[in-house]
Image (cartoon, helix red, strand yellow):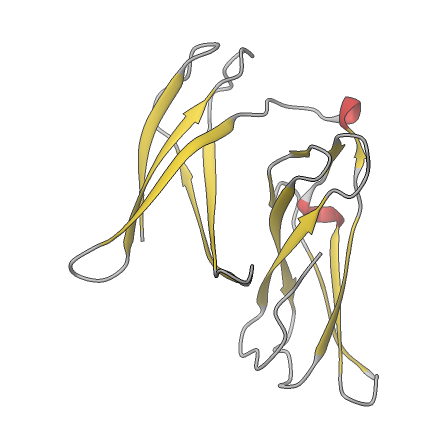
Length: 167
């Protein structure tokens, strides 16, 4: 797991999580936790994630995922973050796991970005609402930004749909 360290003027921190086990694990955003400590080691802030706030829902062995934790107050500059994520065996997962098979990020002329995503239904029944969450990371793995969108339409079993997420 990694988290950015430095000057935080925000309440939201994106965490990267890697499944270092030999089994598929379900990770929910509610199972993400973080604490911030000052240079003397004193606790200065705590944070947790929100239910459903982690992508992908199931991490295969060696796979990376990401989710956000929310601090109720700002994080003082120079704080060190300590993070924890819990996973449960994949069999305990409720819901349908769709996969983003392609995400193309393009700058927009007026600022911001457009992200074309292709989402695939692996053969499961389609729920009434499908969403996509896309994250951008620096070359060193530092989280830069995440975007979320509710996708339009339904996805037949084994099919794909394309959608656009705009900043």
